[in-house]
Each structure stands twice: as structure tokens, then as C-alpha cells.
Length: 296
Image 1: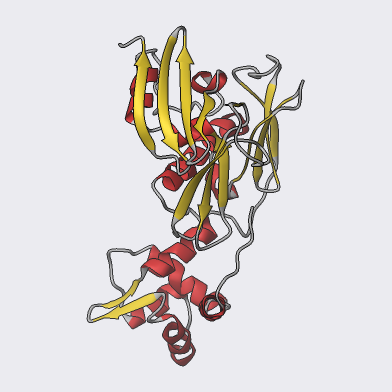
Image 2: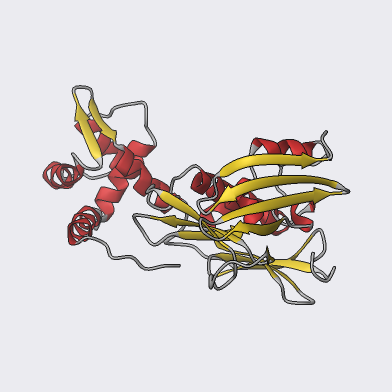
């Protein structure tokens, strides 16, 4: 994770917004309106559903929310997008719950040593690692609400699907935390000291320009939904629309070779049983050319 300098005006505006939510009645109002997204509620209907008998007190709290989190129309009161986002954060359990899970055995075996892979969920983070060589395959934060309703045996697949959705959003240029703009970049060594010919630790990094959110993954993750990559794996009976973060599709991870240093250009090679797909990319992870050998 990175820290960023946030403008004072943004801090002030955020503090003001969250100060409006420092009351159980106001949160209850948002929950009731979120439960009726297509049904504007009159003042009386809303007060009754929230369960506040004092009309003056209820009007005071509703007035604090109206404008930023609640919209008043001729038909009544409706929740705004900002209000829905607040309710969504509460329901995700990010601030209120945190049950540990695991270790749960994960298939297939470790790509480094062929040892047993295990997944655990502790302190709202999922950690997938090899129990034999201690290789970390995945380490990511996941709100507890994501796992609600699933048994422990299902948690690794659910966690994988969630992580894939976060990276998909990042590849599309949006931050999952604040909806800010994500900027992608290529680093060619684990410590980013500079490029070398064959980069075993090449990584794709997505950094939010608004908040401190940063996602780091192996270079293959950056092109999980590229049409050439999807087609390449599909020709080898692997459907990338299904979870494969630590499965068959990435067991033999793609390699990156630096083609030029200035500007930085590289080739990413995906290989399956003698078939190779090469993507030629720049420092911003944009694909400039595609080659496949032998041709399909």
C-alpha cells in the first residue's frame, strides 16, 4: 500500500459527510430507504418504518441527510447513490465482522515445489500459500460480508472470484474503494531497480490517483481478459471466465522479456504444450502487437 497527499478540501468535505452519519437514526433512515429503491416514501411512511415517534426529532435527522445522501421529490424521499454506497459498506461487514477461516486445502499443488497449498482468512485478509515451501500465491483484503452465507470449504473459490472482480475493475480503470482512476504500470523486478532481460518477478501494478489503494499481481493478471489470451487458453480447453487464479491457467505462469529499456517495451509469453502466445506491451501495460506460434 502507498500513502498519498490528500488535498485539505477533500479531507474537510469527507469529515463533514461522515459526521452526518454519526447517529443511529440517520443510519436507520438510509437502511429503510435502501430497502425501497423504487418506492419513494412520504415523511410519515419513512418515520413509521424507522420507528421514531418524535416527529420533530425525526425531521431534524432526515434534514441532515437530505441533499447529500437522501433526495426529496414530489412523491417523497429516495436514497441517493452516496447513501446506497454507505449502506453497501455496512452490509459488507467491513466495519463490524471478522471471523477467521481455515486453513483450507486448495487444488492444484504449489507451482514451485508441488507441495500442498492452503488458504486462510485472518484479520479480513485471505492468504493462499504453500505449506511446504511457504510460497505466497495470494494475499488480499476481503470484506467479511463477501464470504457470508458460504461454508468454509467454499471460501477459497469465493475469495478468488472476488479478487478477480477487483482486478477486472482495476483493468477497466476504476478503483474498487473510492471509484477513482486507476493507473497501470509495469515493474520488471521485484524491487523496481531497473529492467533486465528475463524478469521472473515482473509485476502489474494498479495505483489509484485519488486514494492509497494499490493492487499488485503477476504480469499475467493484467491480460486475463485480453481477447487473444482468452482465445489462446480456450483453444487448450481452459475457460478463463472461470476462476483460475491459482489453477491450471496460471500454474505455468507467463514470462516477460524486456525488448527495450528506453522507452520500456517488453514481450509477455504464454506457453501451453508447445504453443506460444506473445503480447508486446509498454510500461503502461498497453498491448501493441500479438504473435502466436505456431499459428492456430
